[in-house]
Amino acid sequence: MFDQTIRPRRLRASDNLRRLVRETRISPESLIWPVFVIEGEGVYEEIPSLPGQYHYSPDQLGRMVERAHAHGVSRVILFGLPAHKDERGSSAWDENGVVQQGIRKIKALAPEMYIVTDVCMCEYTSHGHCGILCGHDVDNDKTLEVLAKTAVSHVRAGADMVAPSDMMDGRVAAIRRALDENGFIHVPIMSYAAKYASSFYGPFREAAGSAPAFGDRRSYQMDPHNGREAMRECALDAAEGADILMIKPAMPYLDLMYRCRQRFDLPVAAYQVSGEYAMIKAAAKADLIDEYGVMCESAVCIYRAGADILITYYAPELADAIRKGDIG
Ligand code: PBG
Image (cartoon, rainbow, N blue to C red; front, side, top):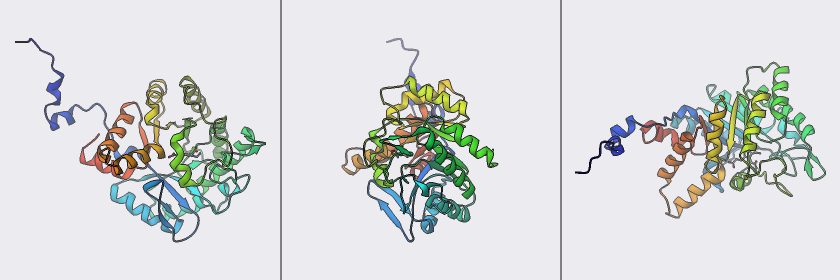
């Protein structure tokens, strides 16, 4: 007989045993669900580019809270669709802006809900770029001021954490300083530290009405060719006071998740972006893949690569999958 003492298959023999030896352990506590708040009243509409996700006007956010509760999800990241856009994106820091209204509504309905806000200008500017323009490019240092004002106004409205996604140089330091000066020393910053100029954001831009009116975002978001540069971005954000580092998108950038986890001791977040979600939805609809299986596997792989936190449109369904023990 073939002399085989070492047999990896031994540990794969039963479901019970496989669950015992899982290397990657996932908790529903590590999920954050993106939510789109739209200005107006009585709006509760499915987003065509993101099946299963909705636009909620502030008065309809109870529906979101109910769905979150039903799945045991208690962390959200808010994006706003304002009624008014201008060159400077002034509705981003309006005390009665759409996100500010949304935060107050959610906190009134569900005080235990942990609210992160995306801090960026692209949804609020008439030109759709992530900051204040100077000619055809975004003026970095002028943008820092409006980002800081926006972050402070979110926190004043009740946000628990802010997440700058603009990729301006120095924005974590600027936001940290502004929060501290306003007495919000305990509010953490989750920085979109390595955010790439990615084609995977297409469905989001449709959902948020934030596509740039001209040009693209390559003068501020990162070039997908570069990995070492992502480590530089992470190091800068950590030095500026970021509390959590995010890599975005997730699946095509797992090498960076891994490198970030090895190199930094801060929590690492992954953003499984709109294009990743929409691709799974579309392939499943065409009967090409099993949606549940692919959803589960992609989440597991993101955690295995090093993510501690996962921001995903699948948060409610993944929370169920984890509780059932199908993953994690
Ligand atoms: C705002 C922002 C974007 C996303 C998150 N914050 C879009 C962009 O940078 O164009 C993308 C999220 C997704 O695709 O799910 N700047």
